[in-house]
Length: 395
Image (cartoon, rainbow, N blue to C red; front, side, top):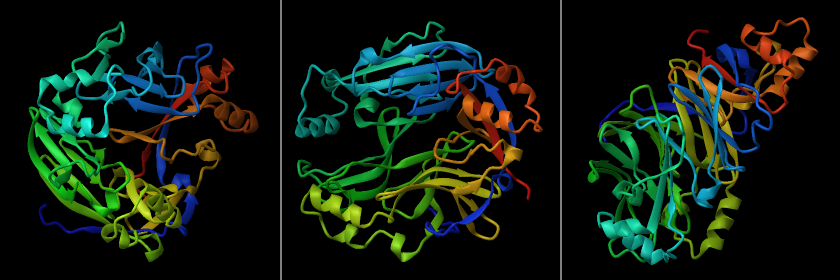
């Protein structure tokens, strides 16, 4: 793992500090997206920012909206025809959107799936799955049929160069041998490194559940932060070196009960009851982003979910729900789990109606130049605007 000085993050989940949003962010800018009839932000939308495009994924309607970085509408992609079980994933290295799922012509049992994963190099096993992709360099933006390979079957995702990583965790009595690892690195489809061993037959904390290690990108493709289920440590993975860098210091009431690691659940119902009874115990850290002054991250508790900003100087944690925007930042709540990082900026999609209402109520505040023409068009309230901003580097 490597030795390093682990920095502490002091977290009081139920009693965080409160502050104005302007303490944390600045350099706010807007990119209004071209207005199109019938197109707006859905209730369950997710955004990706590429070097050339803004992508808005609408999971409910199974559509992808494609814009250039100036906000010009390019294309709407509908993927309903792929059926259930196919979800879009953007891969920066390939500049493509990929869909991977089961071949509905085969009904696989749990034992079948385990055998397929264990024999992942066997080409015969590729027939049980389907892969599709959209090449964003191809301006037709058609959904093309791809080739299922070993990385797809084991659930490995692009890391950097020829390297892939996998962080899926599960247990089953159907495995013959018990040794498995939470994180695995593949080079040219060959397993080359593994981290965090666990018993894949009867590891108590992973019984009757499916978990995933989370990977968080940095400015360097080969450097990622890694966060694990039921673990209060944040790791940094640099190529093949894994080391702990941050440790969450939390009250006892937010710690995972020791019994999770030692006492197996008898069934799924017993596990569900355990999780309900420990609703504020930390389950996993997500969306981890580091700047010189701040850490920005989300925490999934057993029955709750919160997003935080941690100020390194003074060791103060702020719950983003308690961070209030004011008129100097157009009353926009910008820090939450829908915030996406790209380079040194953070991005968030915003509904035009929030901005229109604000400027109607604050006639004394000038409309930013990049929004002026957009606001005058009286956009539909759901029309999307991309807000970009930075976490402050100076007090």
